Every structure is written in C-alpha cells, then in structure tokens.
Image 1 (cartoon, rainbow, N blue to C red):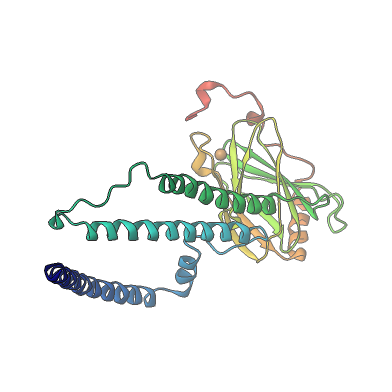
Image 2: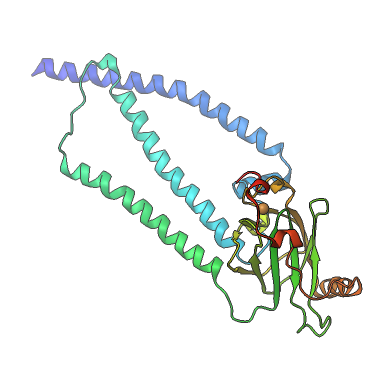
Length: 299
Ligand SMILES: [Cu+2]
C-alpha cells in the first residue's frame, strides 16, 4: 500500500516537472510571437491592416460583396477552429506519450462511439459550410425583374465591348457602345447605387468577366447569355479582367470600371453618342467568324 502511494507521489512529481519544462519552453516562444505580431501590425498602413482583417480581399464595392466576404471569413474561422482542436490533440498526444515513458497508450481499435464520431463530425462540418455557401450564393445570384441599367458585355479575343442599353434613358435616348482592342484598354462606366444587369456573351471562346472588387466573376460562354446583377456602392475606378485562360493574349483582356454619379454616367453615354458609337457592337468582325484551330493559341 505504502509503495503504491510512494510511486504515485513520484509520478506526480515527474508530471509536474514535465509541465514546468513545457511552460518554460513555450512561454518565451509565445512572448516572441506576440512581440513580432505587435511590431508587424504597428508597421503597417491602415489600408493594409484593413485588408488583413478581410483576409486578403480588396475593399468590397458592391451590395453583393458582403455576402461573399462573410462566407470567406466564416470559412477561415471554422477551418482554424477545427485546426486548433486537431493541433491541440496532436500536441497533447505527442507530449503525453513521449517514447521515454516507454508505455504504450491505451489502444482504441473497434471503439464504436469514436468511429461514429469521426465519421459524423466531418459531415457536420461540410453540411454547415454547404448551408452558408447556399445562403451566400442565393443572395449573390438573386435577380430583380427590372434592373435600372442594362449593359450587354461582349468578351471577344482579346478585349471587351460594352453595349449600354440606354434607349429608355431620357437623358441619352440611344443605345451606345464602347469597344476595346488588344492595344486599347476599354472603359466601363456604371452609375453608383443603381441596380445594374450585365448580360455576358462571347462570339469566340470562353472568357470570364471579373471585377475583383465585386468579389464575383461569371463565365462568358459562346452560344449562351449569362447575366449577373449588382449595385455598386462606392465611386472610384476599379480594375476588371478576364479570369479564364482564353488564348494567346488573354493577359491583355483588361478593362477599367468607372463607378460614377448618375450625371457623369449620362454625360459619358452622351459622349459616345457624339462619337457616333450608336447602336450595338458585337466584338470585332473576325471574332464573329468561326475560329480556326491554328488561331486558337493555348486552349
Ligand atoms: Cu479571355
């Protein structure tokens, strides 16, 4: 009886000594990490800190952006929560059953509750992510029957054409267009806080309409019309690009998005009327011809 008590006292001392060793090793590491974090964060500009808080995303620029941003941040929180639990369990097991203990940990083969747990837990994680993804997707792809502004976008090899359906707009009264070329980056003008519908078509290969600040992109597919709606929330100039590797000069498929006041928007459309860019443009003529395989470049 006495020897068992002595043995357990010795065990307690060994465990306490191990804990002390562990703390003395971990504490300086944590301190260094937090000092580094503090220095790193204080050395950053407010924009960079804001971008880090969005986990790398640019400032949101449309009414649909917050849904995607929340899904992005929520997914990382869920991933880190699972990660911390798993890292914790791994570290605990590695420390608890170090080889110098020379003791086999209790084996749990055929432990039914444990097996059910690690089968069901991933399904719960996936189901929760799936649920929030569907909610965000429905909010982002929701369409109203009467958008305030409609713009037909043509993605062609290797630039963009924007058709402003402005015949109903009393300030303009005509449909107008603007087209880019491989050497001229086209401008897309949209009015702030208006519900805009983009109808996307391609006369040649698959492109993808992408304005990173809107957080969403949509494929531009020959033979079908894909459309998306959004309401830009802040005035400014945003970068637009093609997000589908579509051929040799894919990287030239850039455009500038000018989010402006309604007045500026109407003035811009009137300037297109003045230039005679009236009616509808569907991309360059050669782009409308069937593509030959030798012209395809990288496919
Ligand atoms: Cu493209």
